[in-house]
Length: 204
Image (cartoon, rainbow, N blue to C red):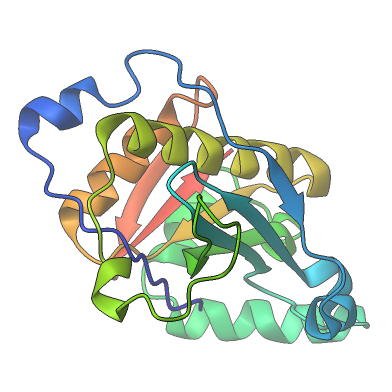
């Protein structure tokens, strides 16, 4: 299971949460990382998307196959499914109740996103002197909405590309989970979700 790290300090009040996503926000330009040797090796099982904000923060959004990562044989996927059935708590049963079949289980994707680096908007150069604490920042409302709109677009396009059935997200806390959920549910009518062992499962 992916350990999700989100380097954004979101001091979200109920009012802000209510406003999130009410209007359509433009998104940043997105590129998929295909040059890194790891992502070349992982091929169809792990995708790394990057985008840079107007404030200079470069985000990495990684979508990883939740079950069957690296599997080349059907029996390997079946073993992973059996393992998930044993250790996944009630998540496996709930997914089945939502109509997720055994064949769908190999198309569950986990997501993690973080700030990878900071590029000074004035110089266009990576600023390595930036204190780490600056990465735990609260973006302006406009930047925040645009970041979330970009994240939502990446997820929507990725799930369409791979025929993804389920998205799994492990938020740092309930507030971040609530904001993330709000955006995801606006992507496509009829998306169902549930929480199990602090992880959120979205059925597309």
